[in-house]
Image: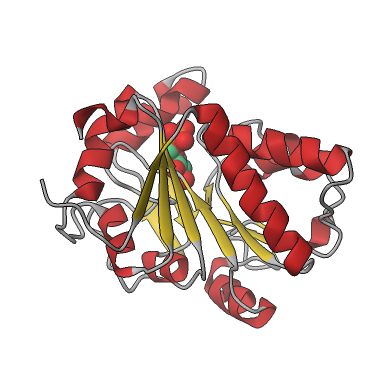
Length: 245
Ligand code: GLP
């Protein structure tokens, strides 16, 4: 099997992954207290956020000057819905650290919102660009909500979610009919503009996705494969995800 030499692959336990990414962010914040963080939702980054909260509690890090940009948000959930990504971020990270809420950005389709999607990439650019981007991956290779077939040059846009993503994400809702069918997502180009990217891939259900990501093929059929063209990507995988390598 041919592996791409550009992306670094680290196979660690989940706990080690969370600590390693927390350490990277902590050292970035020491070097650059006003760093721009690109944040993800889903189950993959939850442990990293727990470690960041712990580090904040012992005053190892401060988010006082940090600006954040989230990857994506569902369309159609009412404000404050427990499955909205705003709710997720508030509950898993923002409410537990000293980040300034007005500096946390989640894309929205609301034209009156400061994070209206057409302005989102400019807002990131004006802030100085994302220093550190955390990603998860969907079983079909999506990153953020960039489903298979998404243009590699895409910026923040509205997405029709694929059946497989709706099914994967239905575990967070009472039933599959409650899962939104649309979302707003940073594009693949928006993500590739980040200076440093880490992607968390854990669990047996991601083993096929990791195997495909490690092949040299770069194709819009598997959106995460674009990461092969970035020279500062680390894949953090656990043994279960690496079981097919
Ligand atoms: C959602 C999110 C993605 C995330 C993916 C995987 O579709 N939009 O950003 O990477 O789920 O989620 P999980 O980490 O729960 O497997």
